[in-house]
Structures are given as structure tokens and as C-alpha cells.
Image 1 (tube, chains in turn green, cyan):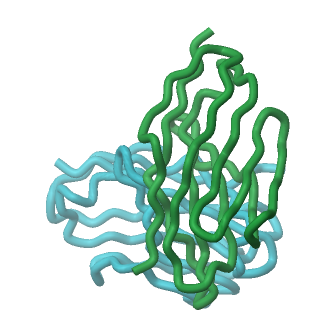
Image 2 (cartoon, chains in turn brown, green; image 1 turned 90 degrees about the vertical axis):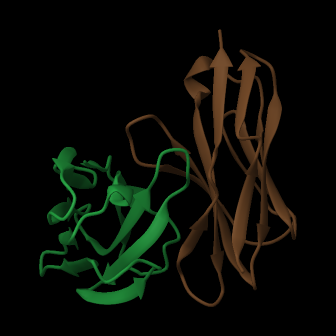
Length: 110
Length: 114
């Protein structure tokens, strides 16, 4: 069964304290892995798509990496405005539907 | 340009009632997907429509139905509401194709079933 597991469930950091979020997946043929950010009361906002192991994408303080079993979202010197829930989703080659993880709630304290 | 718009933003219903949720995609987007998000969980796929045809259906009972109109807006209907249907219902659109490579989400409709 295709599934996505994110860890930790919640992460509290001080402003400027770098860390990583993990997304482990099992899927029968990966088409793509997606990272989204969700603020309270809003829908998810697209961040990155990764397609193959070894691929990396960067945007401001965020960098996403991909291996054959997991993806990491690295946050460098985070700011309070980076506080949000970060969602990971995978897309299998058999269709185009997304399978989502439960997310990691990130809290950055000033 | 306007983003994905959903209405209503909040809704309170009682068990057994029927509900209709509405979604207007970004102009030019022909694919619309519906997701259910329970508090503390990730979105669960319900339906996808592309060019007014159903392109995918998630593991939801037949009480859930949807349709897409010629202007690409969409409705999600839920009959015989249960307490467990309480959730945030999200609509997402994607540009031109049904590949879901980049989804644009609305802010959702928060449905409470009492």
C-alpha cells in the first residue's frame, strides 16, 4: 500500500536554529514528491516538486532533497514567518493522484 | 488574478442533511480536485474533474458526488451527512492538464456536522 509518513509531528525552534523535516514514503513507482506549506485556516501552498533520487530544490531558507525512500526539507536560519505546517505528498506512476502525509507543524520562536 | 475561491467558508449542518460546496478555479485552469482534511491530518483525495469529465475518485462512499460545469467551476455534494464528515473541504485547480504537478488550493470550506 502506498503511504507517506512525516516526522516529527511538531517541531519548535528558536529563530535562526536550523533543522530538517523528514518525509518517508513507500510507493509502487514514484512519479513525483511534493512539498506544500499550510498556514492556519488556509489551503496548502506549493513549494517544490522532486522527481528523482539525488535531486535538490531551493527556495529562500528552504531546501528539499530526495532519496529512494525519503525526502528532507531543510530549513536554514528560520524566521517566525516560516511557522506553518509542512505537508509532503507523493504521486505514483500508476495515476496522478496525490497521497499526503499528516504534516509537520513547525513553530519558530523569536 | 483571483485565486481559487470556495463558498461558503463555514457551514454548520445536522446529521442526515445534504450539503453543496462550490469552487471556482483560477482562470484558465481546467482541472479541479476536491480533498477532505480532518484536523491534524493531511488532505484525502475525493474527486478530480478535468474538462468536465471525472478523472479520478478516492475511497469515499457514494454519498459524495461532484460535477464540473462548462465554465470549469465545480460543486461537491454530500448526502445524508454523518458526524464524521466534519472536516475542512479543499478545492484545488491546476493549469491545463490533469497531471497535478502543481496544485493551487482555495482556503476551504469548514463543515461542522452536529
